[in-house]
Length: 521
Image 1 (cartoon, helix red, strand yellow):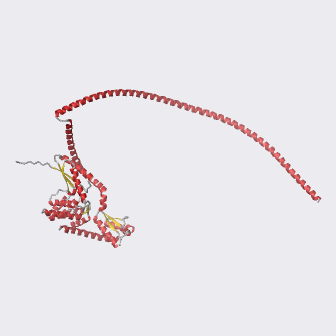
Image 2 (image 1 turned 30 degrees about the vertical axis):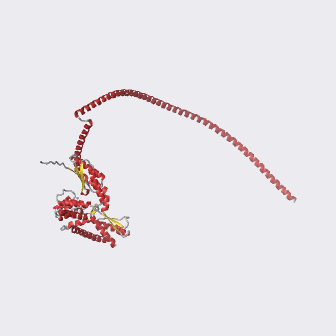
Image 3 (image 1 turned 90 degrees about the vertical axis):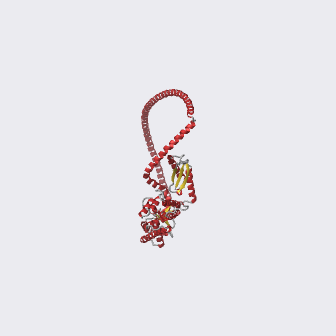
């Protein structure tokens, strides 16, 4: 037990020795490191002081350089500013000189203007005196002239104005006549352009009403069958008939459009047959169109023959009968031309019978007077010229040819038959309800036409004739001379154009007649 305690004491002593040795070593190391650190700090402070000394020297050197550069820059700027100041002072001096010169010039001009103003005032004063003297002289001259002539100044002025007005009217009438002559010479050049422009402006409604037909369909599904695969059916139908088919959003309807009424009728009949049959393909379309064409030709022939039977006109050439039948599909201002021709035939026959003339000839002329309208879309020219040529071609009586030529006044009516046809044509066209104009509107238009003409100075009486297509104006011979009639006619025509609406054109005819009557005793 004692050995163990001794061993413990030895171990503790050894441990204490090593512990003390470690502590001594630690403090010795700390002291050593402190010395080294103090030595390094001293060296660093010396190095820092050396760096600060160098930096201070460099900063002073840099400061001196910057001061020198600033002084040089300041010197340059001062030089530039001094030069600019000198230039501006020189410019200001020059401007001041110019301003002084202008002021001197203005002063001189002002003085000159003042002198001129004084001179003008003097002259104005002198002129006023002279004007007053002239006025006195004029008054004296006027009084003397009135005394010599026996007329007052106003009477002389009125007489002079009347003479000037008369001379101006005479010269104006001559000028109007010359202008009209020149216009007639130039009319042929401008007529086509004027007609084309007029058609563009006013023909839209008329074309829409008179160049289309509507075919009703049982259902909208039929539109697809009419068009066909890739449009082959509609192309075939348009190619064979020469008619445009318009298939749009209109429910259960197809529109046929063409200026030729016969072609349009053929297409309508053919399309209706195809719709009823239901078999629509190119071969069937060709067959049906051919049948429809034969049917329409037969209808045309029957209508022409029916017209001849109804009017009692016989012995017409077969081609003329066909042309009469075609008039069934022609309209004029909404009036069927075939019915109009039959009416004219009856009316002309009644007139001829009342006056004891050739009734048959009058009926024949009345029936054929518009025959040119059956071919006016195929042959160039007016329906009057075309109709006369057709009548000549088929050996009609020369009186009938003349009646056709004269029924619109293109030539003067030289026979009673021509006059009958003229009158019957006007009566049929003017009959209330025959064309697009009711009786009340028609009567008001005629009354207004006469009122316009009667309102002009120098007009004795006016008459609207030929269903309002012509106004005949009787002129007082002592109020309007021959030259003045041209001006009055122009003025009446302008008033009619401005105040009335009417189809076609209105002819203004002025009549001036001087009669001298005496009696032998």
